[in-house]
Amino acid sequence: MDIQLTILGTMFALIATIGLILIRVAPAYAMMTGALIGGVIGGATLVETVGLMIGGAEGMVGVVLRVLAAGILAGVLIESGAAKTIAESILYKLGETKALLAVAGATMVLTGVGVFIGVAVLTVAPIALSIAKRANLSKMAVLLAISGGGKAGNIISPNPNTIAAAEAFQVPLTSVMFVGVVPALFGMGATYILAKKIRNVGAPVDDTEISSEVKGDSPSLAKALTAPGVAIALLLLQPLFGIHVDPLFALPIGGIVGALIMGKGKHLNAYITSGLEKMAGVAILLLGTGTLAGIIAHSALIEAILNGIDALSLPAYFLAPIAGITMSAATGSTAAATAVAGNVFAPTILELGIHALAGAAMVHAGATVLDHMPHGTFFHITRASVGMAMKERFKLLPYETLVGLVIVIVSTLIFGVFGFLFFS
Image (cartoon, rainbow, N blue to C red; front, side):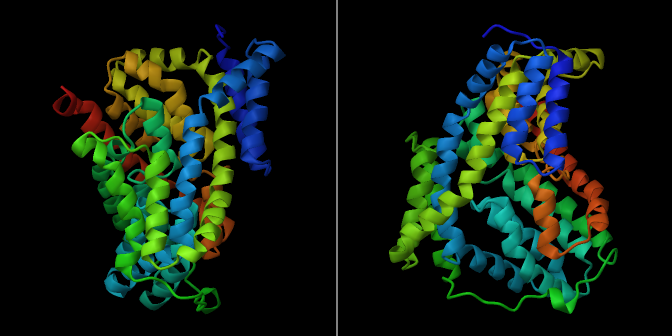
């Protein structure tokens, strides 16, 4: 559909979306409503606006299918106790002396192996609070370690955001995961340094907030790692041997094999059902983001951002991280930000001569910068996980933003400034 909407319409779409999410309207509906308002105000008829929204949502179908398939792996990891085993192994082996590093590392690894970031936070938080109490750490320091570790793990994971980046730029999922490793390690380092600085800032952990509940038996660490290990091994067949195994198959196979090796095959159907339930919300959110992406893709916003980059004499590759950052501010979600930024800006980024994998890496990294904003679910999940007061949670936002900025700056240096070394 050859329509160009005004920047004013796009801004109204984003403002309406954020406003509706802040008053607790379901994010998918908020984005659909924002898209509808933006299209009409931007100069399209109601019929044209609906057409743009549907076109945008259709562009998300591939991502949605892969995200639903990833639910099998996530369900096995969470419901079998594998995620808990992985988290506890890291936390207890590093112990109190390196408590903050252990908390950040556990969240990073858990997210990195395919546990959805919100679930990873809720899995790590109870154990982290227990260690924090013994190590005399504040809740702010612990939550920053959890949040920063989650951000770092998210850009090296087979999670919805990484799938969205790979799909938008048409590059292998494992490649997007691999190019996030160095920025993720720098993000981890920044998280640890910042968390240590605020180790005594804010409210301490109270005895009543420590859970001693243990549910069922958990597998050994070796068995717990089999599900993500098999999934990643299958995905690596393409870059190593040229054998393409789509995430649509690799992630479920990893989950199924992992369940069988852990001796929990009889529970597999329950794990699959649980995983589907967990990913259904993400899939619906991505369809909602698709409607918003359809509006933004046909607006003058892309041209305005490009003009701004030219006016400031910035290199063309700055479009990629800027796209990720602005969309994370608009959506408050890494997955939604990557999906919108990828679908809207990928064609322009590629036209500017930026390599597809470099573009995916920088957009993906940019999506971590402001994904913790209060109109997103991550803000509220993390706050609830440690029982933090709202005022204190707001004080943590600048520190989380710094972690995201470190990740995107490192990614931009590697794949933008020095990108010619990798892709020439």
